[in-house]
Image 1 (cartoon, rainbow, N blue to C red):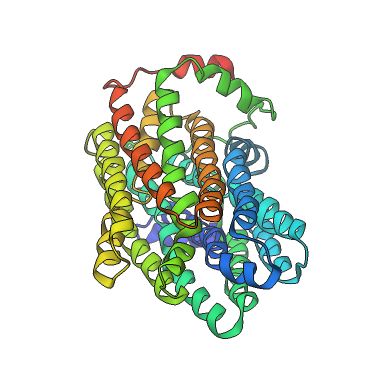
Image 2: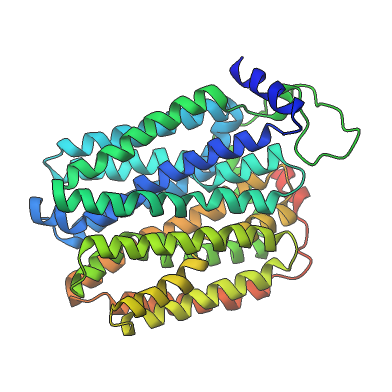
Length: 433
């Protein structure tokens, strides 16, 4: 009832309720990204308190990336069967509970359960698949911009929470740093219950930007989907070269962002003598640049060749990773890295979503992108674990940085193998479903 009243109030003022859905989804992504990013600031505090080495902690955090990614295709199924509101609230409850329960952990398996499994499953239910579903259901135009805005929420979460978390760790201990994230999960869950709706027709609306004269669609019958459906969709697209190019490039995207920099940057700076608060401030600076870069990427993806955009993003990221070990971790060096790396941290998402939708069709875009996003998080898991092992064995992160930089240059090259325009594979996907 509250959402219906608000929708009517907005309609009288010429505003579409779809932007409320965007705002709520943005806050959900912001909170989930804060929960995912905070453990990266806790590698050294956890190591000091419990005696676990960086490699052990990284292996537990790698679990969250694997589950975060593998939940993507099944999150699309859950959203179809139970609706956006129920799925998002459940996800926020899992994330909040996992963060809070971790303050009581005493054994390594507690870390795996709370910050590996619970955080991975919960955040995976509200991952980038949610952004793709919202943009396709609620918008007929401005989809690239919407995906850019929603993807930028992860940068904003990092911008807001990480410096605060680092300051709390330094002054009050790592357990106090968890409280703001838990409180944010609870607050956003209430907003989702009040405001989130599944589709525009539930409020008597058509999608934003629909052609003049478009009628409100009747309530759609529930899709006949099961948990086998994502595997059928995967089988349907497995023979398409575009899918594997996007999967492989997104694997490298996750390897060079969440798994490496988000997880290990503060520890990397600690090795160079930089304290946690300044290091978190550099991450926040990256988040500020990424906020601009990702929104700008959404705008660009509506207007320019998405393949060429991805070529530039991956190439720039690779060069910035090669530069980082030579930055000497000075204010100037890290600022330069934060600018160039931050501008394309998640700028790859809007062009990738548009390539998926244009190749496999609007109806199946969420589920296919779920599998592409699984590649992203598998790459993140490899880097989270691998960089931790490299640091433990070689006492330096440099080999991991160089390997990630080289992988980004490979991604820049293979993305140009996609033909323009992309060959439609909608019929294949529908047949598989």
